[in-house]
Amino acid sequence: MTRILLLILLTGNLLSACSTATDAAALAVPSSTATATATGLPTATPTASPTPLPTATVAPTSTPTAPPTTAPTPTLLPTATLAPTPRPTGDRTPVRLVIPAINLDRQLFPVGLDANNVPVVLDHEVGWYIYSAKPGQGENIVLWGHVLRFRKAPHIPAPFAEIERLAIGSEILLYSADGSVFRYVVTRKERVTPDQVDYILPTNDERLTLVSCIGDRVIVDGNVELTHRLITIATPAP
Image (cartoon, rainbow, N blue to C red; front, top):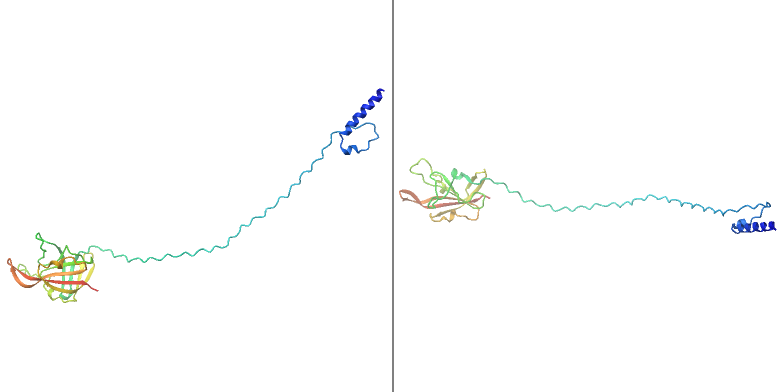
């Protein structure tokens, strides 16, 4: 009886083990050997390792060649026409007067007015009136001188003694302190009274005015004077 119970227990254990076995174990033909082999836990079927995808070979990216760019032709700016640079000027004070027609070549001396506003006329020289213009300034340049000798110095000729003989069209050269030479041509000769001072005032144009005496001789305060003035006007030579 005891042996029968043991066999029943062993048989129950075997059934329990088979119920946990895989389907393949259940289909297996039992061995003739009476000793039962304990069935272990089912072995997990190894999961196949994923085959790595082939690495794509990246083709070298070709740098797109830009179409040749034609450089724009620069537009040339109009060339500015430069005005001629004016010649630098120095001291244009007139210092020498030359009149070839009457063989006159004289140094000039600056003169003004005396205390009574009367023009100062040098005894033996040609004066440049300092309140008149300088050559090249576009105004009236005034020179004056005597036409008679002085009794105290009869051997010294008067600077403008021959000015009356100067004809229209005669050339006059005026030299300035900076070495410049200005050419003028006589265009007018006027006989005026001493009170006609307009001829030595500004005229708004370039001209050379030579003032001398002319007319009848008269005695004034013991001195011999002439009644009129000779105005000789010259304009720039063409």
